[in-house]
Amino acid sequence: MKEPLVEKEYLLQKFDGKGGWTFIEIPEIQPDKHSHFGWVKVRGFIDHYELPHYPLQPMGNGRLFLPIKAEIRKQIKKQAGDTVKVILYSDDVNSKITEELKICLKEVSGAYEKFSQLPENQQKAYIEWISASKRDEIKIQRIITVIDKISIL
Image (tube, rainbow, N blue to C red; front, top):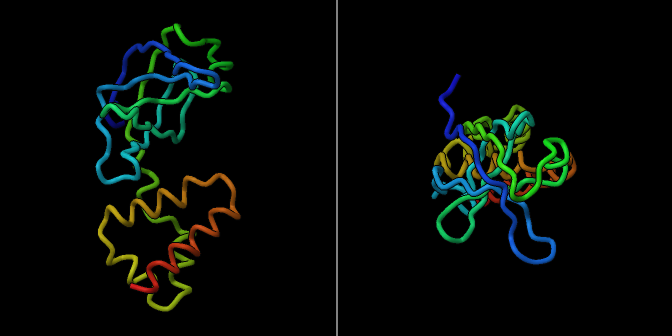
């Protein structure tokens, strides 16, 4: 098993204003210069709640935060002001080309070869962008967009 990026207790905080997000500031993890907006993909646990694939997002001050949805707060029975135990691991699963994307790229003449020649961080960005979609029709549209972009290279 990999070493966790963080394993400690954090305070649940809330951004000011109506509709302000509840979040955990994670100063120990630095933004990823090679990903969109500096996001860092993680997996792990908040108390007993499992986070299979979750993004740490930039706060705008050089630090990252973990947004905590209402669904998660309800499951762990905690709100802003409460302390939670957080264990986070790097989630690099989505950085590898999926079989679905590989098949689609191979169906278009030269697309797989062009994709393979892209810099690794660009491949990773495309793969993560496609994988971030929860709906299949959006994934399909994103795959088509990627194939269109690399076809003109």
